[in-house]
Length: 209
Image (cartoon, rainbow, N blue to C red):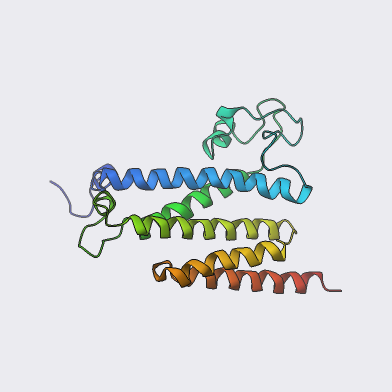
């Protein structure tokens, strides 16, 4: 006898369309990869180090991080949070940032790519039918803004202020597309400006004499 509402988890999971699940998994993996790069940016940028040259290294023994250990989230879990060479602990912040970035991108993709199209198609069908490619560009734009704001938050958390030039360019990048293409919406520009004001207010309150 089957009791309604108590079917096994795998049965519920089977109800999820495979194509949509692949899109969400790819979106999470892509976001986690960008999150891994954000970890590099937040660590190296305040120190004046190159963001392009030089691989990741253990902060303690300076041993290079192997490629298989550099897989977002999974690499840290496989190493149980420790350097493979010197066994020094590696901060849980690294996989946390990667997971948050992946979750942000996956959530944006779920709401903006897999929603029903104006012609009634839903999910990946709208993309394959060529009805949602404009929404793909909007999604990428919103993901870029969200991940940029995440990097701001990480820098502020570490006590480093994003430069006003960076803030100004980000606000422009969030606002100009909304003027040209209304589908982008003003939410990213408003969020960017609001977060910039909040960060500056907090910074003023903390650092004033």
